[in-house]
Image 1 (tube, one colour):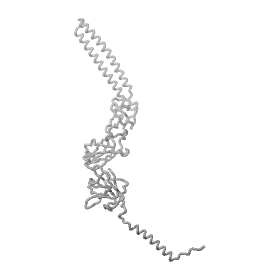
Image 2 (cartoon, helix red, strand yellow):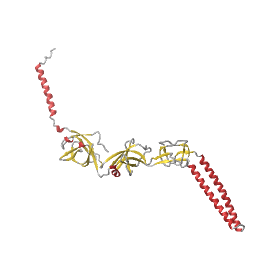
Image 3 (cartoon, helix red, strand yellow):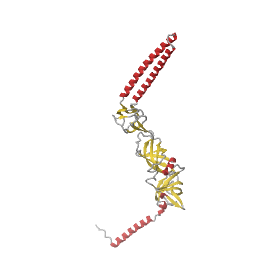
Image 4 (cartoon, one colour):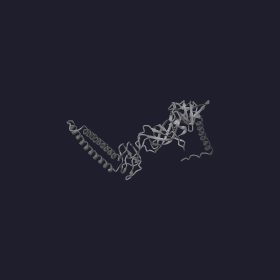
Length: 373
C-alpha cells in the first residue's frame, strides 16, 4: 500500500495565505453594502389626543353629605341596642330601645281617664235630652236647661282632652324605640345598654350612603380655577376607576393655619354600597378649554428651519415624514402639541436626529406609552 507524500512547508504556507485572502475578501464584500439600504431602528409612540387645559390634583377624604345624630325624644334606661359601629341600616330599622314600663303605665292611666270621661259625657247628654222634654212641657225653667247644656259641653271637652292625653301617651311609648330615619351606616355609638339617657342625648350617628363627597383643601390661588374646572375622583382601593365629581361648596373663610379653603366635591352616580367614609381619595381637576392636545416626549420634537416638527411614520411603516407642529406648552416630563397631529399617528420618539425623508426605518413601539394625567 502506497503512502501519501508529506506536504512541504512552502506549500502549507501558500495554502494558508490563499484561505486568509478568501476570508478577507468575504468581509470586504459585506462591508461594501451601502448603509443607506439598512433600515434605521427608531422608537415610536402612538398619539392619543386629550382635552386641552391645565390639569392638577389634590388628596382628599371621602365624606358623607348627610349625617344624622339620632337620639330619643324621651328619657329612660336603655335595655337593648341592635346595631354596632359600621352596621348598615335601612330606614325603619331599630337602633335601640328604652325600658317601656313607665310609658305603658302612663298610657293605661290615660285610657282609663278617657273611659271615665266618655261615661260622664254620655250621662250629661242623656240628662240634657230629658231637660229639653221637661222644658218643652213647661216643667223646668230656661236657666236649668242652660245649666245642663253647659255641663254637656264641658263633658265633651273632657273627652277630647282625654283623647289627646291618650295620643300623647301612645307617642311617648313609641318614642321609647329609636329607629333609623334613612338608609346609612352607623359611624358612632356613644352609649351602652343599661345607661340612663336624657331626651335628645346622642345615641347613634348615621351617615347616609346615597350622597358621597370628597373633601379637599384648596390653596387660595386655586379656588377660582376649581369653580370652573371639570373634576374626577379616584378612591384609593377602588381599582383605579375614576368617578365624575361636581364642586358643591367652598368654605367662605380660609383655615387660619394652612390658609386653605375646605371644599366638597359631590360624586356623581357613585354606585357603591360600602363607601368606607374616611378613605383617602385623589381629586383630579382639568381646566375647561376648547380643542385637544397630544402629549409627547421632548425627544420627539425636532427643529427644522427654526420651526418644531415631529416625524410621523408613513402608512407603509417604512419611512418617516417631518410634519410641522404647534407647541402649546412644555412640561417637566413632556411637551403638549396642539396642532399638526391626529389621533392614532405613530410618532418617532427617539432617533429623530438621524432621520431624513428618504431613509428606511424599522419602527419599534415604546414599551410604555406617554403618561396620561
